[in-house]
Amino acid sequence: MQLRNRLKGSRPKRLLAIAGVTAATIVLAGCSGATGASSSTAPLKIGISLSLTGDFSDSGKAAERGYELWAAQANKAGGILGRKVQLTIHDDASSPDQVVSNYTNLITQDRVDLVFGPYSSLLTVPASRVASRYHYAFIESAGGGPSVFAQKLNNLFFVQPAPTTQGGDVFADYILSLPSAERPKTAAYAKLDDPFSAPIADNIKKRFEAAGIKTVYNQTYPAETADMTPIVSGIAAANPDVVVGGTQEADAFAQMKAMIQLKFSPKWLFEANGANSPGDFPAAVGAANTEGVFSSADWYADSPNPSSKKFISDYLATYGGTAQKIDPTSAEAYSAGMLVQAVAAKTGKVDNATIIKTLHSGTWSTLVGDLKWDASGAPQGAYQLIQWINGTLTTVYPAKGAQHSPVAPKPNWAG
Image (cartoon, rainbow, N blue to C red):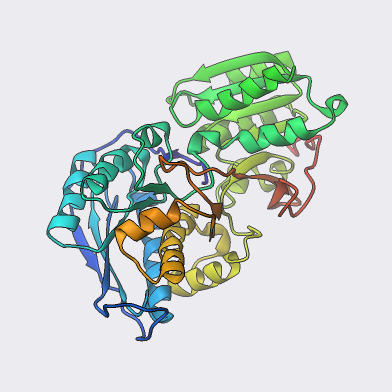
Protein backbone atom coordinates (compact mmCIF):
# COMPACT_ATOMS: atom_id res chain seq x y z
CA MET A 1 0.00 0.00 0.00
CA GLN A 2 2.05 2.25 1.44
CA LEU A 3 -0.92 4.25 2.34
CA ARG A 4 1.60 7.12 2.24
CA ASN A 5 0.87 10.42 0.61
CA ARG A 6 -1.46 9.00 -2.04
CA LEU A 7 -4.58 9.84 -3.89
CA LYS A 8 -5.03 6.18 -4.06
CA GLY A 9 -6.86 4.66 -3.11
CA SER A 10 -3.81 6.33 -4.25
CA ARG A 11 -1.30 8.24 -2.25
CA PRO A 12 -2.53 11.83 -2.80
CA LYS A 13 0.26 14.33 -3.21
CA ARG A 14 -1.03 17.82 -4.07
CA LEU A 15 -3.80 19.55 -6.01
CA LEU A 16 -4.09 18.33 -9.57
CA ALA A 17 -2.23 20.35 -12.16
CA ILE A 18 -2.71 19.94 -15.90
CA ALA A 19 0.64 19.64 -17.62
CA GLY A 20 1.82 18.94 -21.14
CA VAL A 21 1.65 15.47 -22.51
CA THR A 22 4.57 13.39 -23.61
CA ALA A 23 4.13 10.00 -25.16
CA ALA A 24 6.70 7.30 -24.79
CA THR A 25 6.72 3.82 -26.15
CA ILE A 26 8.84 1.29 -24.33
CA VAL A 27 9.60 -1.98 -26.03
CA LEU A 28 11.11 -4.67 -23.87
CA ALA A 29 12.54 -7.65 -25.63
CA GLY A 30 13.95 -10.83 -24.21
CA CYS A 31 14.94 -14.35 -25.00
CA SER A 32 12.75 -16.53 -27.16
CA GLY A 33 11.10 -19.62 -25.82
CA ALA A 34 7.72 -20.72 -24.50
CA THR A 35 6.20 -20.98 -21.07
CA GLY A 36 3.02 -22.68 -22.29
CA ALA A 37 0.86 -23.43 -25.30
CA SER A 38 0.04 -20.46 -27.54
CA SER A 39 -1.41 -19.97 -31.01
CA SER A 40 0.63 -16.82 -31.56
CA THR A 41 4.23 -15.76 -31.31
CA ALA A 42 3.41 -12.09 -31.91
CA PRO A 43 4.42 -9.74 -29.09
CA LEU A 44 1.98 -9.46 -26.23
CA LYS A 45 1.23 -5.74 -26.34
CA ILE A 46 0.24 -4.14 -23.04
CA GLY A 47 -0.83 -0.50 -22.88
CA ILE A 48 -0.49 1.72 -19.83
CA SER A 49 -1.17 5.36 -19.06
CA LEU A 50 1.04 6.75 -16.29
CA SER A 51 1.66 10.14 -14.70
CA LEU A 52 5.19 10.76 -15.89
CA THR A 53 4.65 14.50 -15.50
CA GLY A 54 2.31 16.51 -13.28
CA ASP A 55 1.39 16.12 -9.63
CA PHE A 56 1.54 12.33 -9.51
CA SER A 57 4.78 11.99 -11.44
CA ASP A 58 6.92 10.61 -8.60
CA SER A 59 4.55 7.73 -8.04
CA GLY A 60 3.84 7.36 -11.75
CA LYS A 61 7.54 6.84 -12.40
CA ALA A 62 7.72 4.32 -9.56
CA ALA A 63 4.87 2.39 -11.17
CA GLU A 64 6.67 2.59 -14.52
CA ARG A 65 9.75 1.00 -12.97
CA GLY A 66 7.66 -1.84 -11.59
CA TYR A 67 5.87 -2.52 -14.86
CA GLU A 68 9.09 -2.37 -16.88
CA LEU A 69 10.96 -4.62 -14.48
CA TRP A 70 8.21 -7.23 -14.63
CA ALA A 71 8.18 -7.16 -18.44
CA ALA A 72 11.96 -7.50 -18.64
CA GLN A 73 11.98 -10.45 -16.24
CA ALA A 74 9.06 -12.11 -18.03
CA ASN A 75 10.89 -11.78 -21.34
CA LYS A 76 14.10 -13.10 -19.80
CA ALA A 77 12.14 -16.22 -18.82
CA GLY A 78 10.78 -16.68 -22.36
CA GLY A 79 7.83 -14.31 -22.44
CA ILE A 80 4.17 -15.08 -21.78
CA LEU A 81 3.18 -18.28 -23.56
CA GLY A 82 6.14 -17.73 -25.83
CA ARG A 83 5.19 -14.14 -26.64
CA LYS A 84 7.57 -11.31 -25.80
CA VAL A 85 5.99 -8.61 -23.66
CA GLN A 86 5.89 -5.19 -25.28
CA LEU A 87 4.83 -2.22 -23.14
CA THR A 88 3.42 0.96 -24.65
CA ILE A 89 3.36 3.68 -22.00
CA HIS A 90 1.75 7.08 -22.55
CA ASP A 91 2.05 10.04 -20.20
CA ASP A 92 -1.28 11.32 -18.86
CA ALA A 93 0.26 14.38 -17.14
CA SER A 94 -1.81 13.50 -14.05
CA SER A 95 -4.94 14.59 -15.94
CA PRO A 96 -8.27 12.68 -15.87
CA ASP A 97 -9.11 13.99 -19.36
CA GLN A 98 -5.79 12.85 -20.80
CA VAL A 99 -6.04 9.42 -19.21
CA VAL A 100 -9.32 8.83 -21.07
CA SER A 101 -7.69 9.81 -24.37
CA ASN A 102 -4.69 7.62 -23.66
CA TYR A 103 -6.63 4.43 -22.97
CA THR A 104 -8.98 5.06 -25.88
CA ASN A 105 -5.97 5.43 -28.20
CA LEU A 106 -4.13 2.46 -26.71
CA ILE A 107 -7.12 0.22 -27.43
CA THR A 108 -8.44 1.63 -30.72
CA GLN A 109 -5.25 2.90 -32.41
CA ASP A 110 -2.30 1.09 -30.84
CA ARG A 111 -4.49 -2.03 -30.63
CA VAL A 112 -2.82 -3.36 -27.52
CA ASP A 113 -3.81 -6.82 -26.32
CA LEU A 114 -4.12 -5.87 -22.64
CA VAL A 115 -4.02 -2.77 -20.45
CA PHE A 116 -2.74 -2.09 -16.93
CA GLY A 117 -4.00 0.74 -14.76
CA PRO A 118 -2.66 4.27 -14.10
CA TYR A 119 -1.72 5.89 -10.79
CA SER A 120 -4.38 7.21 -8.37
CA SER A 121 -8.09 6.68 -7.90
CA LEU A 122 -8.68 10.04 -9.61
CA LEU A 123 -7.36 8.61 -12.88
CA THR A 124 -8.41 5.00 -12.33
CA VAL A 125 -12.13 5.79 -12.31
CA PRO A 126 -12.32 7.28 -15.84
CA ALA A 127 -9.69 4.90 -17.19
CA SER A 128 -11.53 1.83 -15.95
CA ARG A 129 -14.70 2.98 -17.70
CA VAL A 130 -12.84 3.06 -21.01
CA ALA A 131 -11.53 -0.45 -20.43
CA SER A 132 -15.01 -1.68 -19.51
CA ARG A 133 -16.51 -0.13 -22.64
CA TYR A 134 -14.10 -2.15 -24.80
CA HIS A 135 -14.39 -5.30 -22.64
CA TYR A 136 -10.74 -5.20 -21.52
CA ALA A 137 -9.57 -6.59 -18.22
CA PHE A 138 -8.37 -3.74 -16.00
CA ILE A 139 -5.66 -4.87 -13.61
CA GLU A 140 -4.72 -1.76 -11.65
CA SER A 141 -2.27 -1.36 -8.83
CA ALA A 142 -2.87 2.18 -7.62
CA GLY A 143 -6.54 3.06 -7.40
CA GLY A 144 -8.25 1.68 -4.29
CA GLY A 145 -10.57 4.46 -3.16
CA PRO A 146 -14.33 4.01 -2.62
CA SER A 147 -15.18 5.72 -5.93
CA VAL A 148 -13.35 2.99 -7.84
CA PHE A 149 -15.39 0.12 -6.43
CA ALA A 150 -18.67 2.06 -6.42
CA GLN A 151 -18.69 1.61 -10.20
CA LYS A 152 -19.17 -2.15 -9.73
CA LEU A 153 -17.10 -3.08 -12.79
CA ASN A 154 -16.41 -6.80 -13.02
CA ASN A 155 -13.38 -6.27 -15.28
CA LEU A 156 -11.48 -4.34 -12.58
CA PHE A 157 -8.92 -5.87 -10.19
CA PHE A 158 -7.14 -3.72 -7.58
CA VAL A 159 -3.69 -5.14 -6.87
CA GLN A 160 -3.45 -4.52 -3.14
CA PRO A 161 -4.71 -6.64 -0.23
CA ALA A 162 -7.75 -4.47 0.57
CA PRO A 163 -9.39 -1.16 -0.36
CA THR A 164 -7.18 1.71 0.73
CA THR A 165 -9.55 3.04 3.38
CA GLN A 166 -9.31 -0.29 5.20
CA GLY A 167 -5.62 0.24 5.91
CA GLY A 168 -6.18 0.49 9.66
CA ASP A 169 -8.39 -2.55 10.05
CA VAL A 170 -5.45 -4.78 10.87
CA PHE A 171 -4.49 -2.51 13.79
CA ALA A 172 -8.03 -2.74 15.13
CA ASP A 173 -7.87 -6.52 14.70
CA TYR A 174 -4.69 -6.65 16.77
CA ILE A 175 -5.96 -4.42 19.60
CA LEU A 176 -9.28 -6.26 19.82
CA SER A 177 -7.48 -9.61 19.87
CA LEU A 178 -5.91 -8.65 23.21
CA PRO A 179 -7.53 -9.87 26.45
CA SER A 180 -9.94 -7.18 27.64
CA ALA A 181 -7.75 -6.40 30.67
CA GLU A 182 -4.80 -5.61 28.36
CA ARG A 183 -6.64 -3.44 25.84
CA PRO A 184 -6.46 0.35 25.85
CA LYS A 185 -9.34 2.01 27.71
CA THR A 186 -9.21 5.37 25.95
CA ALA A 187 -8.35 6.53 22.44
CA ALA A 188 -7.64 9.75 20.54
CA TYR A 189 -8.01 10.31 16.79
CA ALA A 190 -6.27 13.01 14.70
CA LYS A 191 -7.25 12.90 11.03
CA LEU A 192 -6.28 14.64 7.82
CA ASP A 193 -9.32 15.94 5.95
CA ASP A 194 -9.12 13.90 2.78
CA PRO A 195 -11.11 10.92 1.47
CA PHE A 196 -8.30 8.41 1.94
CA SER A 197 -6.89 9.28 5.34
CA ALA A 198 -9.77 10.18 7.65
CA PRO A 199 -11.78 7.01 6.86
CA ILE A 200 -8.86 4.84 8.02
CA ALA A 201 -9.06 6.38 11.49
CA ASP A 202 -12.86 6.50 11.45
CA ASN A 203 -13.08 2.77 10.75
CA ILE A 204 -10.83 2.06 13.73
CA LYS A 205 -12.83 4.47 15.91
CA LYS A 206 -16.10 2.74 15.10
CA ARG A 207 -14.73 -0.66 16.05
CA PHE A 208 -12.98 0.58 19.19
CA GLU A 209 -16.10 2.33 20.47
CA ALA A 210 -18.20 -0.76 19.81
CA ALA A 211 -15.71 -2.70 21.94
CA GLY A 212 -15.93 -0.19 24.79
CA ILE A 213 -12.76 1.85 24.13
CA LYS A 214 -13.76 5.41 25.00
CA THR A 215 -13.01 8.26 22.61
CA VAL A 216 -11.45 11.17 24.54
CA TYR A 217 -10.30 13.25 21.55
CA ASN A 218 -11.42 13.35 17.92
CA GLN A 219 -10.17 16.04 15.55
CA THR A 220 -10.12 16.43 11.76
CA TYR A 221 -7.68 19.05 10.43
CA PRO A 222 -7.35 20.65 6.98
CA ALA A 223 -4.60 19.70 4.56
CA GLU A 224 -2.81 23.01 4.97
CA THR A 225 -2.22 22.42 8.69
CA ALA A 226 1.53 22.64 9.25
CA ASP A 227 1.79 23.06 13.01
CA MET A 228 0.38 20.07 14.85
CA THR A 229 1.28 21.39 18.29
CA PRO A 230 -2.24 22.63 19.18
CA ILE A 231 -3.78 19.31 18.13
CA VAL A 232 -1.20 17.21 19.94
CA SER A 233 -1.53 19.42 23.01
CA GLY A 234 -5.22 18.59 23.08
CA ILE A 235 -4.44 14.90 22.75
CA ALA A 236 -1.84 15.04 25.50
CA ALA A 237 -4.30 16.80 27.82
CA ALA A 238 -6.76 13.95 27.30
CA ASN A 239 -3.95 11.43 27.97
CA PRO A 240 -5.33 8.54 25.88
CA ASP A 241 -3.88 5.04 25.95
CA VAL A 242 -3.87 4.81 22.16
CA VAL A 243 -3.48 7.47 19.47
CA VAL A 244 -4.65 6.82 15.91
CA GLY A 245 -3.40 9.13 13.17
CA GLY A 246 -5.46 9.13 9.97
CA THR A 247 -2.51 10.56 8.10
CA GLN A 248 -0.53 10.91 4.97
CA GLU A 249 3.22 11.39 5.21
CA ALA A 250 3.94 15.04 6.05
CA ASP A 251 1.23 15.39 8.67
CA ALA A 252 2.20 12.09 10.30
CA PHE A 253 5.74 13.36 10.76
CA ALA A 254 4.42 16.66 12.11
CA GLN A 255 2.21 14.82 14.61
CA MET A 256 5.10 12.81 15.96
CA LYS A 257 7.49 15.77 16.10
CA ALA A 258 4.91 17.59 18.23
CA MET A 259 4.56 14.55 20.50
CA ILE A 260 8.33 14.41 20.93
CA GLN A 261 8.49 18.12 21.71
CA LEU A 262 5.65 17.85 24.24
CA LYS A 263 7.10 14.63 25.69
CA PHE A 264 3.78 12.84 25.22
CA SER A 265 4.21 9.13 24.44
CA PRO A 266 1.05 7.00 24.26
CA LYS A 267 1.12 3.28 24.99
CA TRP A 268 0.07 2.53 21.40
CA LEU A 269 0.58 4.81 18.38
CA PHE A 270 -0.72 3.97 14.91
CA GLU A 271 -0.05 6.24 11.93
CA ALA A 272 -1.89 5.26 8.74
CA ASN A 273 0.94 6.60 6.60
CA GLY A 274 4.37 8.07 7.11
CA ALA A 275 5.57 5.50 9.59
CA ASN A 276 5.40 2.89 6.83
CA SER A 277 8.05 4.74 4.82
CA PRO A 278 11.39 3.13 5.72
CA GLY A 279 13.37 5.73 3.83
CA ASP A 280 11.65 8.92 4.98
CA PHE A 281 10.41 8.16 8.50
CA PRO A 282 13.70 7.75 10.41
CA ALA A 283 15.15 10.83 8.76
CA ALA A 284 12.06 12.88 9.58
CA VAL A 285 11.67 12.08 13.28
CA GLY A 286 15.07 10.65 14.23
CA ALA A 287 15.95 6.97 14.04
CA ALA A 288 15.72 6.51 17.81
CA ASN A 289 12.16 7.89 17.82
CA THR A 290 10.77 5.29 15.44
CA GLU A 291 10.71 2.54 18.07
CA GLY A 292 7.32 1.00 18.75
CA VAL A 293 5.32 3.01 16.20
CA PHE A 294 2.70 1.01 14.26
CA SER A 295 1.54 1.38 10.67
CA SER A 296 0.28 -0.90 7.91
CA ALA A 297 1.64 -1.93 4.53
CA ASP A 298 1.33 -4.37 1.67
CA TRP A 299 5.04 -4.48 0.76
CA TYR A 300 8.32 -3.12 2.16
CA ALA A 301 11.97 -4.07 1.83
CA ASP A 302 12.01 -6.53 4.74
CA SER A 303 8.67 -8.06 3.84
CA PRO A 304 8.56 -11.80 4.59
CA ASN A 305 6.88 -12.44 1.22
CA PRO A 306 8.83 -15.31 -0.42
CA SER A 307 9.00 -13.51 -3.79
CA SER A 308 10.41 -10.34 -2.29
CA LYS A 309 14.12 -11.20 -2.30
CA LYS A 310 14.27 -11.89 -6.03
CA PHE A 311 12.24 -8.79 -6.79
CA ILE A 312 14.63 -6.67 -4.74
CA SER A 313 17.68 -8.27 -6.34
CA ASP A 314 16.34 -7.68 -9.86
CA TYR A 315 15.24 -4.15 -9.02
CA LEU A 316 18.63 -3.14 -7.62
CA ALA A 317 20.46 -4.74 -10.54
CA THR A 318 18.31 -2.71 -12.94
CA TYR A 319 17.87 0.62 -11.16
CA GLY A 320 20.50 0.70 -8.42
CA GLY A 321 19.91 2.31 -5.05
CA THR A 322 19.08 0.44 -1.85
CA ALA A 323 16.26 -1.91 -0.93
CA GLN A 324 14.92 0.54 1.67
CA LYS A 325 14.41 3.14 -1.05
CA ILE A 326 12.22 0.96 -3.29
CA ASP A 327 8.80 2.55 -3.54
CA PRO A 328 5.99 0.03 -2.79
CA THR A 329 4.25 1.40 -5.89
CA SER A 330 6.87 -0.47 -7.93
CA ALA A 331 6.10 -3.73 -6.15
CA GLU A 332 2.38 -3.21 -6.69
CA ALA A 333 2.86 -2.58 -10.41
CA TYR A 334 5.14 -5.61 -10.69
CA SER A 335 2.41 -7.68 -9.03
CA ALA A 336 -0.05 -6.69 -11.76
CA GLY A 337 2.18 -8.46 -14.26
CA MET A 338 2.49 -11.48 -11.98
CA LEU A 339 -1.28 -11.93 -12.26
CA VAL A 340 -1.12 -12.07 -16.05
CA GLN A 341 1.63 -14.68 -15.84
CA ALA A 342 -0.39 -16.73 -13.36
CA VAL A 343 -3.51 -16.71 -15.54
CA ALA A 344 -1.47 -17.72 -18.59
CA ALA A 345 0.18 -20.55 -16.67
CA LYS A 346 -3.17 -21.83 -15.41
CA THR A 347 -5.25 -21.54 -18.59
CA GLY A 348 -2.78 -21.49 -21.48
CA LYS A 349 -4.51 -18.28 -22.61
CA VAL A 350 -3.95 -14.59 -22.07
CA ASP A 351 -6.99 -12.87 -23.62
CA ASN A 352 -9.16 -10.39 -21.74
CA ALA A 353 -12.21 -12.59 -21.29
CA THR A 354 -10.06 -15.39 -19.87
CA ILE A 355 -8.27 -13.01 -17.50
CA ILE A 356 -11.54 -11.58 -16.17
CA LYS A 357 -13.17 -14.95 -15.68
CA THR A 358 -10.10 -16.62 -14.19
CA LEU A 359 -9.16 -13.89 -11.71
CA HIS A 360 -12.69 -13.97 -10.30
CA SER A 361 -12.02 -17.44 -8.95
CA GLY A 362 -9.38 -18.64 -6.52
CA THR A 363 -6.58 -16.81 -4.72
CA TRP A 364 -3.53 -15.38 -6.46
CA SER A 365 -0.05 -15.00 -5.02
CA THR A 366 1.80 -11.73 -5.63
CA LEU A 367 4.49 -9.58 -4.01
CA VAL A 368 1.76 -7.77 -2.07
CA GLY A 369 0.18 -10.94 -0.73
CA ASP A 370 -2.44 -13.48 -1.73
CA LEU A 371 -5.25 -11.68 -3.55
CA LYS A 372 -8.88 -12.36 -4.32
CA TRP A 373 -11.64 -9.95 -5.30
CA ASP A 374 -15.37 -9.40 -5.05
CA ALA A 375 -17.48 -8.70 -8.13
CA SER A 376 -16.56 -5.00 -8.11
CA GLY A 377 -12.79 -5.57 -8.00
CA ALA A 378 -12.36 -4.81 -4.30
CA PRO A 379 -9.74 -7.15 -2.79
CA GLN A 380 -10.92 -9.29 0.10
CA GLY A 381 -7.81 -9.44 2.25
CA ALA A 382 -6.10 -7.18 4.77
CA TYR A 383 -2.90 -5.22 5.02
CA GLN A 384 -0.07 -6.33 7.29
CA LEU A 385 0.40 -4.64 10.65
CA ILE A 386 3.97 -3.42 10.85
CA GLN A 387 5.91 -1.93 13.74
CA TRP A 388 9.32 -0.36 14.17
CA ILE A 389 11.34 -2.79 16.31
CA ASN A 390 15.08 -2.36 16.85
CA GLY A 391 15.22 0.19 14.07
CA THR A 392 13.55 -2.01 11.44
CA LEU A 393 10.05 -2.21 9.99
CA THR A 394 8.76 -5.58 11.13
CA THR A 395 5.58 -7.54 10.42
CA VAL A 396 3.88 -8.17 13.77
CA TYR A 397 0.28 -9.15 12.95
CA PRO A 398 -1.49 -11.35 12.03
CA ALA A 399 0.49 -14.09 13.71
CA LYS A 400 0.75 -16.09 10.50
CA GLY A 401 3.73 -14.56 8.72
CA ALA A 402 4.65 -12.29 11.63
CA GLN A 403 8.37 -11.71 12.14
CA HIS A 404 7.99 -10.59 15.77
CA SER A 405 5.27 -10.22 18.39
CA PRO A 406 3.86 -6.70 18.76
CA VAL A 407 5.72 -4.58 21.30
CA ALA A 408 3.63 -2.60 23.80
CA PRO A 409 3.70 -0.20 25.46
CA LYS A 410 5.61 1.98 23.03
CA PRO A 411 8.96 3.09 24.47
CA ASN A 412 9.23 6.74 25.43
CA TRP A 413 10.57 9.10 22.78
CA ALA A 414 14.33 9.35 22.72
CA GLY A 415 14.03 13.12 22.42
